[in-house]
Image (spheres, rainbow, N blue to C red):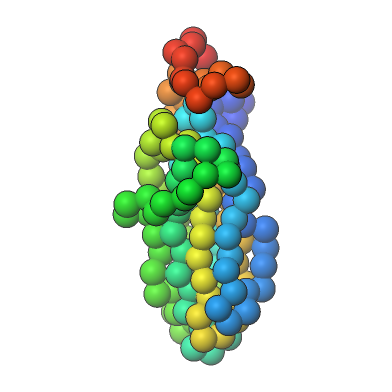
Length: 140
């Protein structure tokens, strides 16, 4: 167990929210520098009738930069009938020059409860210098 904990990092993704109709559920920015993979665990709780939840992972080269969707890293059409009270998982590669991640989404038609954590794993030996955007290879 200690070996596993040394090899991963768990970060807050989305603070638990009871999303209203059309409510954006943008997450906290996750800095994935030094990791090659990210696993998002999205917990969907109770959903009102007719609620539909859409979530996608986004990446950026800088914390405050422009975020774009990560290909094939989305949850679509999570509906209240079959989709409530379940965990969902999105696993994707971290682009080394776009290590800043966040999950964005909306709740359409009605309300839903949602939260998420991001588990970073697969240390890749690239650590950013605090004063530049260039990566440097180090022995982790």
